[in-house]
Image (cartoon, rainbow, N blue to C red; front, side):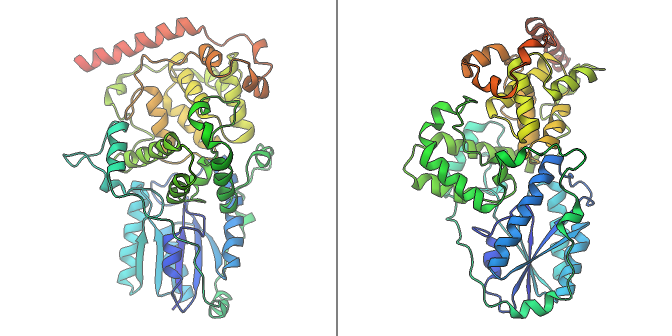
Amino acid sequence: MTTLVWFRDDLRTDDHPALAAAASDPGGVVALYVLDEESAGVRPLGGAAKWWLHHSLESLAAALRALGVTLVLRRGAAGEIVPAVARELGAGRVLWNRRYGAAERRVDAELKQGLRESGLDAHSFAGSLLFEPWTITTKTGGPYRVYSPFWRACLASPPPRAPIAVPVFADPPAVAATMASVPSDALSDWQLLPTHPDWAAEFGAHWRPGEAAARARLSEFLAERAHRYANERDLPASEATSGLAPHLRFGEISPQRVWHESLASGADVGMFLSELGWREFAWHTYFHRPDLATQNLDRRFDAFPWREGAGESLARWQQGRTGIPLVDAGMRELWRSGTMHNRVRMVVASFLVKNLLVDWREGEAWFWDTLVDADAASNPFNWQWVAGCGADAAPYFRIFNPVTQQQKFDAEGVYVDRWAPDSVLTPPLVDLKATRVRALAAFDRVKVADRT
């Protein structure tokens, strides 16, 4: 019988446990991707992520085709689509790699139960994280709230498994006849690419989605930049980072592959791997707190007096027209490339929530729509960290001054000149000192609410 492999945020053939498990099936393998914007609680993709998904699916289809595996595309609720395609194929098994959001886990659990009750073999595998969220807990069995002990616990656990090679499949003629009766959506019909206007026109100059590009980017980073990552990762003009975030977000490369190749490279990768650990921390937190994008982890911040009627300030921040050069450079880099240097992300986020007193959820939503690497865990997790209400959060009184941050990390103005050379001509939207005082006064209200 045919095995159906359901792809999600794991758009690769290398180190894909579900695909590798299907390789031994003599009845052949068919791959399925479902664009699910209907299942309750599943967050629809933002615009920039849709751009990436389109190109990533093109790459995946070609890689699978080279293995003799066909990729079927369907749009709709996964709980309905997956069983339907399995029936059309006469499949005997349905396999996938696990997801960790609450809504996604609910869909997967109900689907697995339904498939098994229908007589199909259904299994899931660990393929997206180094450590399963339920395996890293405190001594009392709860989740960690602070990164350092979390990462120590990870490092004290059995090491991440070795990556699995791209599987070799038997001749696919048996699948060809079956596939003739299994329709697939045309990727172009999903209209994932922006057209009127094509605001992603410059993305292609910065990114090449797909697992081949992900593997090449990792190799290049380890050979050319890893040795200076620890010292230069905060310098936005130095291009010392890996650029793997969107590839990891769409699972075009596995964290296990990144982990083991990094250690084997001989470079000093401790700091780099700790950032991979921060990604794990975000996902483990999201597993335990599925409302991460909507609710403060620190509920004291429910009393925080966010500004009302700040729409004009928010719009100028989104457009990179604040008159604060480093902030404007970051926001324009985001709009034109679909990404932003991590140090600058912290600066622009701090400016929004602390200098402008705009609710962090507004910034999270904007990043969700404009970042190619925005995922359901890291995006809200990092916004809550900057806002002071998240796990291992930066204290609220830690307010990034974008002027001193530029002096420290972009002293020659190379990054600012690249993205927002005209920003110095725009009057500053706010007075940084005065708004810092205002932010601290607002935080005092949170502390008062905590004592009452």
